[in-house]
Image 1 (spheres, one colour):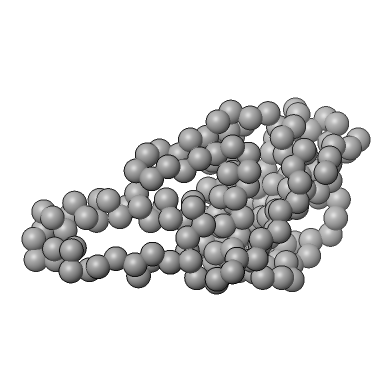
Image 2 (cartoon, helix red, strand yellow; image 1 turned 120 degrees about the vertical axis):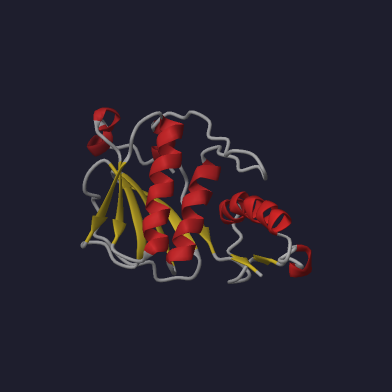
Length: 183
């Protein structure tokens, strides 16, 4: 589905913004992740702005006001919807909106290998207007990994610290891969 139109004809020179509904810490984090990751892919700085006009777990990637009135996502899971003037990412909850952020970046060619920095290839803005809508309803609301805590070595500070250092890169990898819980 092509979404280029007369309103976006001059968008290549306008600053791209991530506008998010006022919500909790996860939605704010999702907005910053989208701005940072997509900003690197586009080689430009994306501004992050909260909005009282948006409600629910919603982020608008836009060059200005979107042509369509803001509506909360009525379904489960999440959606990535190209719209006149940008892309709308919305979810059933803030975790789902974060899933949508990482899915958008994967759709645009990003990769998130385990134990390595994200691979964020350079792209042109036109890729955003050429996207097809994405609607995702996961089969399970919790997509989780479990760990045997007996291997964490609580009583040996050096071994425990090494395990925690690994977890600090593992947990973000889980989120970027569509997993949303750790047990």
